[in-house]
Image (tube, rainbow, N blue to C red):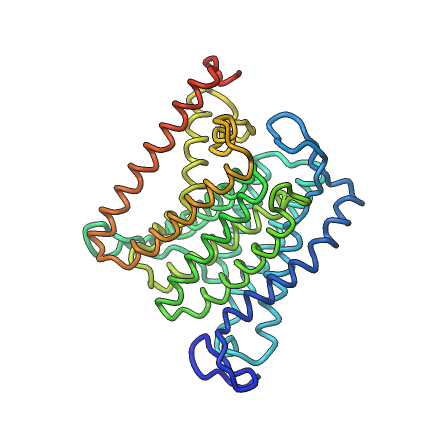
Length: 370
């Protein structure tokens, strides 16, 4: 390919094509090709998710699907660096850092999908991944002051970055309880992040979110209900890491008006669901990291929606929040904070109404049992 003629545009046989589209399609095709191979591997290794308990599928489903998306994201990204194109003028250091941070996360996910891993070990490995990102320049050097200006994080940069990585990674992991839900949520969030990267001419963010969106779209071919393969912890934790790292690139460059609040809005469904789950378990004196059937998708199913209808409702909510995140980012700061406040109040009310309807339809005792 010849040299780029513009940010994100290249000539292919005399036609100007958005570079992000090439990356998106490449990652999508690669995921489509690799996923059946990973599925066969999962069956051979016995990495199966068996029905029962809070699970809603009736037959054993292979896990480890995250390996296919990881191969597509990292493979497409490194191949893009090896070939002529717009990325030749970008520093390879962030991609190297993301790749190295992905290694312990993927290893953790594979072990967890095969035989399970305790919560403390998961948190420790996620923290190690956060430290790896910090070592390669990722971080939260400053936070937006609602009243104007920025507040330097100083020595809090490292712990804030680790907390951010742990938060986003576990948010995606906790919402991965309905066929296609986490995959679609990450697809929508990555497209919203791509748009804001485009508005700031940030090719690195466009580059990473394009391959992430392509890989998740390709995986949906196999993960749409009824799913033929699950992403497993391998996928949910890897996708969460990539989303966290991409938003840190935006924050590091100082291009986002409301810094990390933008991805918080774009990923509002999994993050708010995780926060409510955390508070509920503390209130009921239950283990914080023990799974239950009280997530938003479980409540929608108990309200009478089919798995597909529940999925579409949550995808719609994710898309709405993704659009609102783009709108908030484009607004003047004072208006942005006001809209964020209204969004938070609306989401809190919606979750409260859903919980009320759920409890009226299926009364529980004080410990949340049927």
